[in-house]
Image (cartoon, rainbow, N blue to C red; front, side, top):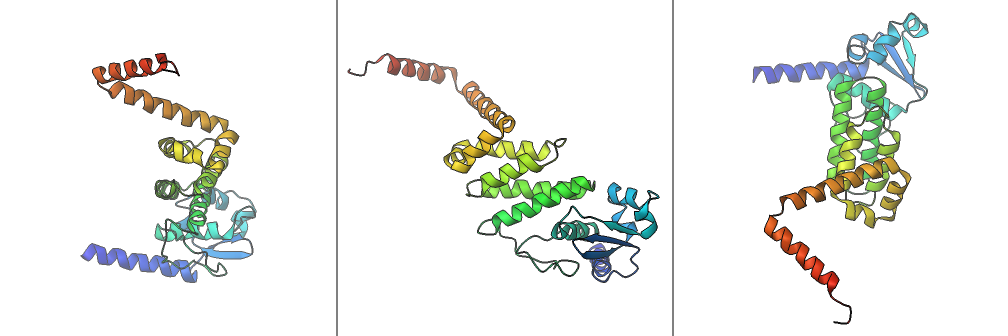
Length: 246
């Protein structure tokens, strides 16, 4: 009980630092928004930011890091995670202030489902860029969970396309998990015109899906009792030998 209370107190302290920027010694700027943050919190979790403030270049001298290629919603989530080990995703809030509200109802299906998946994917890509391994793992788990919950949705093929095309080439972990989910549900995936297009446009990933499907088929055949397998083969041969007119 004591430790739980103390952890809750620490979380409240971190939340206050995140909200009011008190004692801030670093500014991270993105799309016109300045985030007043703390080096000890941010740089201890990200080698990207650590290198930026210890490089001897302009960022170190000015205590300011500009991120012109990133979007403010994703950066807000990244920085929120650094303080609270959690980032919110849900209906897109007003991002004119920092941080985002901390509590959301996060539907896994419905009209906003694809937006949620896209937000997790952007966090995953940003976590790789800024080298924040724990955040990357959290975003990966969120995406895999979303995929298991939404593989039958109409939006699933478009998210698969985004993951296969936009995740870092050196990182196969998320791609492999999504490829496995596609293979497990290949008939449903092919029933969507978008699903067919995704496979056609991503030949390497399509081959990986096909290999998984073939491997599972082989495992099923190997697990089938020999007598039943022989009966199945004999039945199949008899059907082929039967003439259309008989």
